[in-house]
Amino acid sequence: MEEIKKKRIFSGIQPTNVPHLGNYLGALQNWVKLQDEYDCAYSIVDLHSITVRQDPARLRRQTAESYALLIAMGIDPEKSIVFVQGHNPAHAQLSWILSCYTQFGELSRMTQFKDKSQKHPENINAGLFTYPVLMAADILLYQADCVPVGIDQKQHLELTRNIADRFNNLYGETFTVPEPYIVKSVAKIASLADPTKKMSKSDDNPNATIFVLDDRDTIMRKFKRAVTDSGCEVRRGEGKEGVENLMSIYAAVTERSFEDIEREFEGKGYGDFKTAVGEAVADSLAPMQERYKQIIADKSYLEKCMKEGAEKAYKASRKTLQKVSKKVGFIVL
Image 1 (tube, one colour):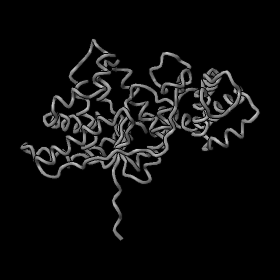
Image 2 (cartoon, helix red, strand yellow):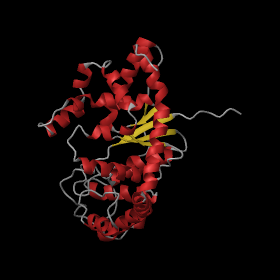
Image 3 (cartoon, one colour):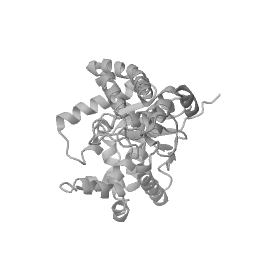
Image 4 (cartoon, one colour):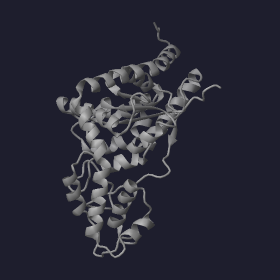
């Protein structure tokens, strides 16, 4: 019987910060599950990170750490293509070609360019402007059928689809036009200090964000300081956004329903609940943290995985780049 070809998914993560609990529960855990159903390509997108000035030594370290974290979380380099974007020069090559098929007006409407320009007015560089084209190249290079997207990336994926359609209309079917992959049930994790805002890596309040490499004592301290309300009941309701956020986190790591949680903590106060949430989160992260320590300490294993990932990525993307190069008129050797 002929084997059914799996659809391909592409997704990438920047190496500039350790992922926080919201990233982990809302996206990265799902990456692990997707490996069983899809042909997955996951990338540490180091090229994207330099639109903002980086310390070179720190960027190299964080790239290795981010790669090790993906494996520690359960991304299998034998099952998926796991690679560092900069290790495959085809990304930059295709990005230049696609830049010539992207309109200036399209890029000027990108909201992330406007936002980052305001945050970094001293460094409004061309890379910041053309960043979405490189993102399109990342996706189209691997003929991705689906791309997991959050709200802040929907506009970029729509541009990717427009670029693919434009190129296909000019030269015939070349690129797979990717569809957004919408996760049906995603834990939406808010700041522990202000439950009206998303949990963020860049929050000024050090107690607002749980990072996936935080130790148990740090996790417990942050949860004990989490904002709740003046009441004492562990339940959902108006004015109880802080409690509801903690319930969402507890539900995500224990796979329990809100109704079960309300029953479990009936008659108990916020102190007991915060302790239980902190312990559940620390317990859920502990195996991944231990695996991470082993991988990051084994430099030869990490380098081997990176090299093999780079080879797989190049092999998977070479045909697309050659096809595109031929169609635009380049001599392909």
